[in-house]
Image 1 (cartoon, one colour):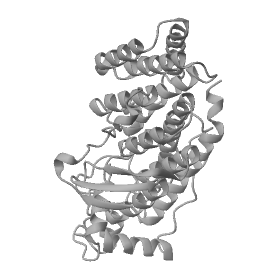
Image 2 (tube, one colour):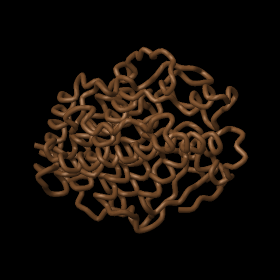
Image 3 (cartoon, helix red, strand yellow):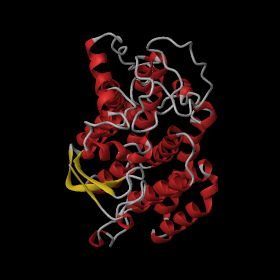
Image 4 (tube, rainbow, N blue to C red):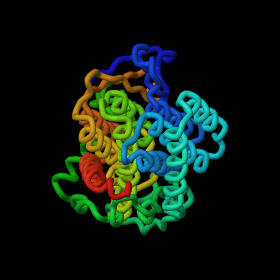
Length: 399
């Protein structure tokens, strides 16, 4: 992994697609085409809660995976994918219906007319209806996700709203949502965080104190760039890495559809599991611990999100991404790829292994001053665990 600075005009906005080399553009790849449609729709009209956006991805691509699961000729498969994702997106993001309709017309115009094309359209539409019906009222709409949380009385180790806004807790309702493959939200709940007086917790808190403060004298310029880069939203941060895996994969069209579906189903379930653990343990954030412990003016490099410390949601996204992409495409890409971030304008970081994204996410949240290292490490492990579970059980969703 390496990072470099580039001009603002050269930076790729988060969620923007990676350019396809001209040699690959001779034949349109319908999977990448509809991946880009989905990414564009959610970049233009995102829900205010990131798990809701993952839900849109998961429903749309699970419907597509169901439509193509038995394997058919290319005309059927392309028509089925386009129809399934189109019908799902029109229902879930109606404000972007015109552009999704236009994309469908473009795809269908390219596919030769015939019975295979007609069957594909019908199959995609049928599976979209089925999947949307199954997920109706699943508790992943923004209002349900941000269900009110009653803050407990202040006490050592107990989460309290954090400065500067002291905003109400968010994502409390995730833990009550309906998972895709988990039996229940606490199925993989991690062990409790270390005791406040333990060597591990005291060491981790001291690390945040020294490296995560806004005026740190020990954090390097490179560490500050990593912290700022990964301060971006967790869900959109992995849109481009998944696309890289998709374009590098030599698997069949149907298997690559499955890749997108598995990833997003796993991401939804990971966030349900993350919120379960966060609100089961309600561990205070480093800023609260440090100010309570005698540093009343200590301020993190970045503003602390409004939910408990343990485990880190950013890290769970990294862990599930690493697990799913490694399992489906291998531990590294054939060629290094560049990532950019809206929270670090002008910075490009180059990666080639999925594990390096996890490593940087773990470090970044410490250097931002918003998580203890144990919260990041346990979060990454939780994401990997849910990812393995999803990979093992996903085919049950296809029947």
